[in-house]
Length: 119
Image: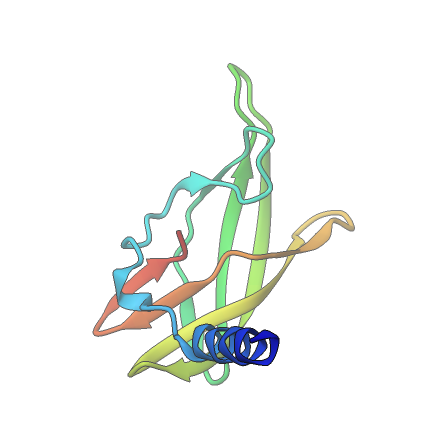
């Protein structure tokens, strides 16, 4: 009985690993959205371009409040063909001025002229 349970668990894990996300179900990407890093930061001006095996965009990180600071940045993702489109993943951003850098879990999917952002 124990072996049967272990076998069923292994099959279930393998099946879920093989299941692919449906990227076309993601919401259409807007140029402004809350930062994945939180902290009341809004990302503005997000307009990716795919060139070769990269997705690139400039953007502003804008603090909330009545007199917000604005930080101009650029982000580069690796572009991977998937589901008849392009998945932009493993994003690395850097500030135009200063030494701020980082990564993001945010992903973008492009297909049929539409960019979609990960939920």
